[in-house]
Every structure is written in structure tokens, then in C-alpha cells.
Length: 280
Length: 285
Image 1 (cartoon, chains in turn cyan, orange):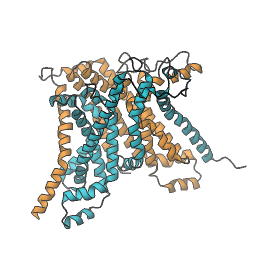
Image 2 (tube, each protein chain N blue to C red):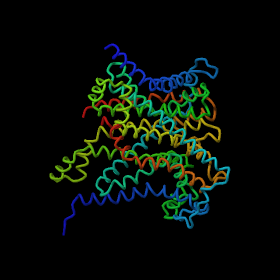
Image 3 (cartoon, rainbow over the protein chains, first blue to last red):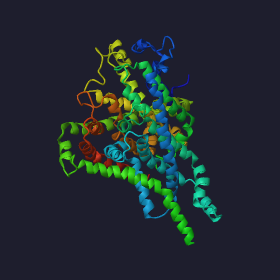
Image 4 (cartoon, chains in turn cyan, brown):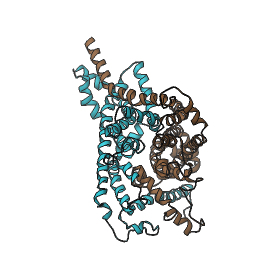
């Protein structure tokens, strides 16, 4: 008989722990999204793990709840515009910060890291007051500005740290060949930093897609709301909205980030190691 | 030559201009404005009253203390559980698929994920209370979000549940930075897995672990969305943390001055954490 080694014990422990942990992480999600297909009686019964009959009625809500599809559209508009702007302005800035010499740029790199660290909600009072001065309360533009503001430092930092992996000789050679800096930016820097751009875009999109605190203050007209604050104001159970409808909407709202994340997971993880944790 | 230099300068200038504008108009302005608001009366005169009010308000002091509890408990769960999970995952065959699945809580958006726990915690039909009462572990249902003594911890768990996978991923990435030879030679020397963990794994990822932990502390300190969605600071104001306190003053009272003062008075904590982060970042191995 083979003797039991410490490695075997630790393997066994690892497997049983992961099994337990998986249930803890995954069952709540299963419970919630199966609720979209359950009847409203079954949702209130913890012993009914599986829906007895698949019901899709929650996805086809009465006309007044059609507003929800508008909310998802609003989220899509706000999150993708914010992502596009953030990436477009961050890549050139990250490039310059990594290449330019001098005290000004060095200071700016430090400011960049500080801005990236700073928690967004500590600025909320000043930011909201400023938006109202500019007449941007209850507009998508105002919310997009918020999202651009809090993601630009991170994406610029990602690009900045990624630039050190791209040799400067290439750019120098092209400069001698008569390429302009702008042409190098569009023809070389953008394509070469593609992986980190995807990472930054992914992060910005997810952040904007999730954000509730700023959105709750900035937006108020029902047809302008983004999906998360729309969901939060539904007050299922306490209002006429049944829980099955709430979970059906939640499922629809969760699908875009799920697809985006799992399709681009590779970029996300490689970026995570290269960007925020690069200095470790 | 001069033309080339000018060209270079203009590229540098224009390439950085939009981000510079964002920094000034959307980050520096709000910060300065918030400071001004904190020291102004409603009419716009200079005053210290807001700051005095906030400092003397027992609810604010309690919120500040709760913020410290919130971030320390939250981070202990995320990094404790995250580290155990990362170390366990490394020993499992085909861990990549499991790892991908375990990231699900983080990919589910915040609002639905908080409502999941709102439901699981429910005293009448929540799964957790059903489990507790039917197995006889507790006599009656526990009011997870209704009991002032435990509501804060219920919120912390809902928050930590969502973010543990993210930090597990980060820690797993850190573990992969440790050269495999270290483990092989430890094996040859007959070290137990536990000893290997203490003597090799932990020292090798010390800086990495600390940096990410402080990073997570800073961001959690600024994140009161979970509090706001789950309890809005209730029951009996028992779950207010600094952010939700300020938010409540701004939204419910329309008092921007007190709200600004509440945030400004907590800024030293954030700045301290940021300084710690910069210090750790400057460490040499």
C-alpha cells in the first residue's frame, strides 16, 4: 500500500475546499436567475430549487415596463461612449508620458497614479455641484463626463506602463524616415498597444455599466435612467413589480458584461498582471 | 532641427491636452469646489460651522468608526478567502475552467448581485434563514439586514462575496510569478505544503499582497454603493459609513455644505492609505 504523503492531504483539502467555495459563489447566482423562469409562488419557497415549469412570461412585460429596454439602451450608450472617449484620449497621453523627458512629465506621472488611486465617491459633492453649474444634471453628457473622469487616469496609467515594452528604436527609425509623430501614433502605437487598449476599454465599460451612486444623483427623468438605477428604483416585492420580472430584467442586464468579459478574458487577465500590478 | 523640436513639442502638447483637461476640469475642480463648499454657509460666506457640526455629530463619528470596521473586515475576507482559494486552485487539475466559473459573481453587475443577497437574507423566505431554522441551528429567523447589530456585517459579506473572485484572480497571477524551481527544491528537501507556503509563497508575494491589499482598502473606503442599495444607512442609522452619510445629506436634505464637510473630514484617512501605497510601491525586494 502506498503511504499517504502530505501532498495528498493538501490535494484532498484543496479539492473539498474548492467544491464548497464553488457552491458559495455559484448557487446564489443560480437561485437568482432561475427566478426569472419561476412562478411568483415558487420564488418565495426556498425548497423549490428548480422551476416546476419554465415560464418566459417575465421577459414579456406589460407595456409600461417596456421602459426597461430603454434603460438597457441608455446604459449601452453611456458606457460605450465613455469607453470610447477614455481610450481615445488616454492612449496618446500614455505614449507621451512614457517617452517625454523632463520634470513636468515626471510630476504628471505621479499625479496620474494619485488620480488613479483616489476613490471616485469622495469627489461626489463637488462634482455634482459643478455639473449643476454647467447645466449637465439630468443629461447623459453629464454622466459620461463622470465616467470619463474616473477611468482616464487608470487607462492612461495602463498605456503608460505598457509603452515600456515597446522599443523606442522603432519609433526613432520611423521618425528618420520622415513619419510624423501623429502618423506613428495611429500606425504604430495604437495597433501595438491593442491588448492593453482592450484591457482598459473592458475595465471602463464594466465600471460604467455597474455605476449607481453618481447615476442616482445625475439622472432623474424615467426615460433617461441607466439600467442599474432603473433596477434599483423598481423596488420589487414592495411595488407592483413581481420578483420574476426583476430577475428577468437583471438577467438581460447581466448578459452584455458576461459576454464581453468571457470573450475577452485573456486580455483582461494579461492586462491585470501588466498594469495595476506591474510594479509588484 | 528647430522645426523638428517644435514639431515634437506640439505633438507632446496636443497628445496630452485632453487628459490634462480632464485632470483639471473634472478632477481638480470638483476637489477644490468640495473644499470650498465644506467651508461655506448656504449663502456663500466662510464658516467653520459645517466642519464643527460634522465632527460633533455622534452619527458622523459612528460612521467614521464603521468605515474603518467596514474596510478592515471586508479586506480580511477578500484577501483571506482569496489567498486560500488561489493556493487551492493551483493544486487542481483543469483549474482554469473552474477559475473562469468562479469569476461569475464579479461579472454579475453590482445591483443584481446585491439584490441576490437581499433575497437570500430575507427573514421570511430567504434561503439562508430557511437553512438555519430547518436544521435547528437558530430558533427563529435572523434579521440579517434588520438587526442593527449585524446589518453592517451582512452588507460587508454581500460586498466581499462579489469582489473576492477579482482579488483571487489577482493573487493567482501573483502566485504564477514565483519560479517553479523554488517549489521543486522545497519538495526535494522534504518540506510540507504548509511550510512551503509559509517559507516560500508568502515571502515571495509579500509586496504584491500588501500593495493589492492597500489598493483594495482605498477603493473600498470610497465605495458605499452596497450600503446605499441594501439599507440606505438603516436600520436606525446603524449602517451609515462616511460616504452614505454625506450622500444622505446631499440627496435627502439637499445640504451640499454638510455633505462636503463630511467627505473632507474623512479625506485624511484616504490620503494616509494613498501614502502607504506609494511607500510600498517604492520598496525594493
